[in-house]
Image (cartoon, rainbow, N blue to C red):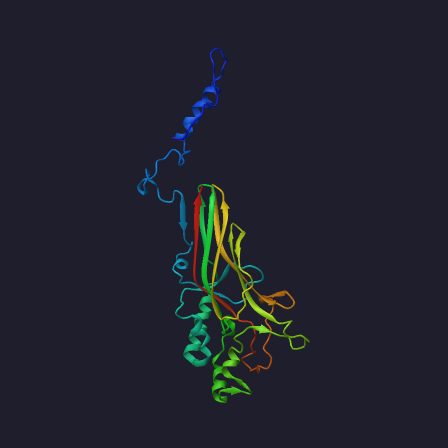
Length: 315
């Protein structure tokens, strides 16, 4: 037990009140009322079996089970509006919508594959927008929440705007006319640019005014941003992301930690940005067919192999 000193000293003949006795007694009672520390607990006297699980630290996983297994794939087709988004189209069938398979789809597209892609796309779109990974937990004590998120981001060469799936007439036209239309290969017609960067040709300084399609990600806890990435361009078709942030939590409240993303065109030269949902610059020189209205520099984004954890450290 730690050293405890008498707070009030009473001598013979003093007139005292009960509080003066209670102050001294509380010095000892406090040791039995939860105020234990290294001064009054012998080393290794309390083992793991004597402590209830999650007494000091609690590890909490995603609210949705399939997020924890990394099975979900989220599709951002720039149709959800501006600003930070916490919902997206989702499919648990990663065997079908893996980036490599969909990106090479135009190179070996036959009627069955294109039709299957369109049917699958309609099914995903019909399911509506789903929540991005999030963790919900109740805090029974004041403490600190450490929020971590990891996943992979991929820029698709393919349109996941499902109304834009190429119909079979386009492929029949390409097959009948040969591998090229004019000076453009058939692959270029469907995904002409691996790097989504638009330079307006009417500007004198085209590189300075170039716009690059970027993504940005952040972690929020109860609506407050605790970790945030900068603009991430599409120089790499796929790349991992990892975010970690901390924030205090209060006793007796329901908490929600979640990942959010936004998409925009950023101009490093002019330091300005345009929301991706509001601008889809067309690719010049792509011939317009009766059933195909051309292409755009804008490409959709995928988020997959996700996992999210909250470490709740209690006081």
